Structures are given as C-alpha cells and as structure tokens.
Length: 103
Length: 194
Image (tube, rainbow over all chains, first blue to last red; front, top):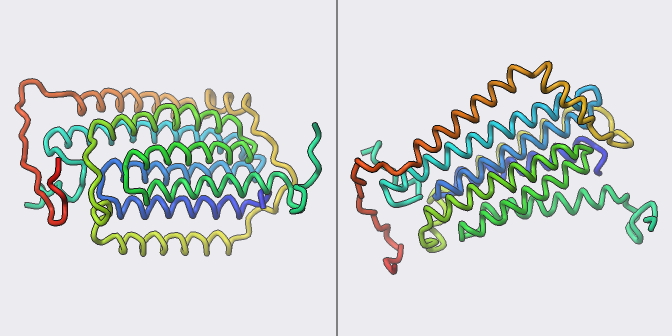
C-alpha cells in the first residue's frame, strides 16, 4: 500500500474534499481558513508524492512544495489579519453576518 | 533490536502499517477539524493533522518536507490560528449554528469533487510502484532553490515581506477612527446568555 502512488493520491483527494466541505459548510471565518489550510496540505501531499515516485523530479517537487508552504503562510497571515480587522468592527467572526455589502 | 521483516500476525510490511496508521490519524484529525463544535478544539485537531502529514512526508522519503511542515505549519501557522481564535473568541453557538444552513450543498460539492478526482486518479496509469522510496537529496534541493529557482525565491521573499506589512497594517488598532460598533444581530435559537 505504502509503495504505490495511488494510495497517496487517494489520501490527498480525501483530505482535499474534507477541506472543501469545511470551507463551504462552516460559518466561522477562522474555521474556513483552517479548511483552506487542509486543502493546501492535500495539494502539497500530492506534489511530494509525485516527486517521490518520479526520481528525476524529486528535487523539483520538494522545491515547489516549499514555495507552496511559503505562499500559504503569507495567505494565512493576511487572511487572519483581515478576520481580526472585520471582528473589530462587527464583533462577530461568523461570515453570514457580514451582510453590509449585500444591504 | 532488529524488527521482523513483516508485522507479526498480519503479514504486512512495516511501511504499510505506518502508512495506514498515519493516514488514519491524518484523515480522522481533519474530519474532527471540520466537524467539531468548539473552534479551539478544531484548532488543536488541526495541529494533529499537520503532524500526521509530517509523518507521511517521512514515509515518502522527504525528511526535509517533514521538518518544514513541523516548523512552519505546527510552529507558525497553527499558533497564528490559535491566537486569532483567542482574539475573536465567541461562545460556541448551539449545535445547528456551527454550520451554514445550506451545509448539505457543501457536502454535495465535496463528495462530487472527491468522486471526480478519485475517478481521474484511478483511471490514469501512474508510474509503476517502486520498491524503495529514496530520500530526496537536500543538497540538490538547495542547489535548485538558489540557482534555477532563484528568481521565484526572491519573489517569495518579497511576498512574505508584503504579507507581514499587510498583516500588521490590517490588524493594527486604528487610534483616530472610532470603532463602528454595529449591534450584533441575535439569530433565532441563539442563546442570549453572556
């Protein structure tokens, strides 16, 4: 099981869809950001798995995965800062109460 | 102490056992992140799922990625998320209010994406199974990072700087501007107990 690419890709798919569900179903903005982190982790797992099973791409895959981690860290920083800034004004982290652009 | 070649009584290789256990931890923790009612617990389960993924990276022969995962995700991102939770902490709502009312649409979308991706994964002929996963050469990764990928590396550095400045600017308390405290709408079914 552990030496076939399929099992790692299936694990990645399952992790990604858990993240998709969390992102679409949760009301709390921070929980949505956590689901985004789950999805990014799933993508990274797929990248590293492809690299591990294609020897000539192993180093490239690690490099790309490192870039993904760096960009994800930046995304988390700005995303959480935005949530905190909105929380200052609206006193709630629940996204369906941010209705001022709709009204 | 030498281990037997296969797991006693099961006949699996040790790698398979480690893979199954780690993927169980990873998926279980990820499900608990999404399903748990208390947001602090979600954050702590998120740490466990990051750790499970670090174990999977070790199994894939990429200890560099495992170390980075622990340092960046568990050490930085998870702590950042936990701090943000503590700043914006509100009482965890009653059970139906943790999820959107249309949560079943999200479930449908997630299942549809999972099925589509699984079909495409299973129908594609991937490279054959390898007998042993060689560890990625860290020296070669460094050479690649500072030679072929030097420009992207600089761009990522700039992006991180911009993210730090942007994050500080956004999260900073505005002194001169009064806070526009919009009174919070109390939904039906949500307790007013404070």
